[in-house]
Image (cartoon, rainbow, N blue to C red; front, side):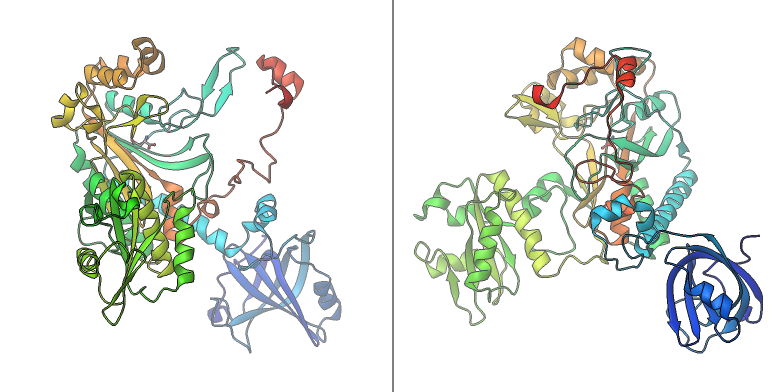
Length: 586
Ligand code: ASP
């Protein structure tokens, strides 16, 4: 038997017992005639004691161990003199009689501590060492718990977990595909699923009624902190439902997770906000509603008074940074630099300070009277001590810039707390987006999303006006899930493909299997997919999804531990009948 107990379970009730433990050497401390070792496993840490007077040989052996050695010890559980109330085993220690080195360890390149000295690169290369650290371990345990609760809830709601293939065909989620060559079908490629979208719809045609899968999806996109080339979705689909059935059921799932995992109960239904309102008041389709600071439009009030920049603007809007009237020249300059960054894209920043003595101070005093500025202040509901930050320009762009500035101000004012959760649904997205560069429409969600019934007539007049029966769940400014009611009529689907610029042949080549399936009795259906990694990182209070994934890739899409992707041998390429183009010929 390797062990009688784990390193996390012994306490005073075990006093006097002989036990055997196995684990990793976390720390060794030599104090006079005593040597203390912290022995670690997944469950915790137990203190081992070696006494020079009692057994010099054993104590010497203990002193020769190194960090991360795997050892086994036998000894007696004793009460500690210096108790450590911070850990469950902190009242006891093991007086060791026998020690066995199971496996020595090379000195790890960084410390295996909660706060480590290792940089991100080296920790990714030695991921197995990083994963020994508590913060990562706790994230993976949280992820496991959440997956179990998802399964439990959906199982109770009659969902069936069905696996779909990884070697698939291109799916329309709008990113590039990862592709896999087929040796048996030379010149042909599988695509890894960007999501199991088409297959889950086919499962509805097949009559499974309620499907789910915790599934890997693959998208070849540029990477960010909350994006990985492969990520996990809680993918779901249901038949004979309309939008509200889906919203209610999956609001239930999220509430269940909050309750069981975090002990937080949401008694009220989640807010449902239209896409238009989200853009208008928050400058984002994923509004962070942990705090107010809504955008106020002042176009009519500020235009036409001789201030050229505003006079030429399609839209003028502001946010009210509460309590920031004291901002110095330097602060304002920093904010101006911020809004001018290419990612924000504003050309400048105008401010009005409503000073605590009731007077106004602004960067546009020359163009506006005190009374005029007062009206802006009132419209934006500002109080003495507040600061209005104003941007102008093309409407959509300016709203987005205001949305970004709003988040920046919230960060400065510490309004985005990790332990406050503000979920909502964003609904009524536009069905289509016009792409100026490509001169064609794209589906905002995906091509199978149903239009709102009363908007269908716009297909022939102004397709940009069509709203979609699509919805996103947003928590704290993060889109954690999204889905839609699907088109289940062959004709409407054909109309959609046509509007998206597919020829009949193209649609047939790419989605013929789905259109065929729809001929054989497709039920009305709808679904949703949650980004599981994002959901876990949100619950863990993290900004990045990397640390809730056991083996993530870096920003260049590389797995530093596996050193992947890597080159194939000539023989492999030949067998696949693939020729690669050397860099210089590209
Ligand atoms: N397949 C969609 C996605 O990955 C989700 C859905 O519509 O169910 O975003």
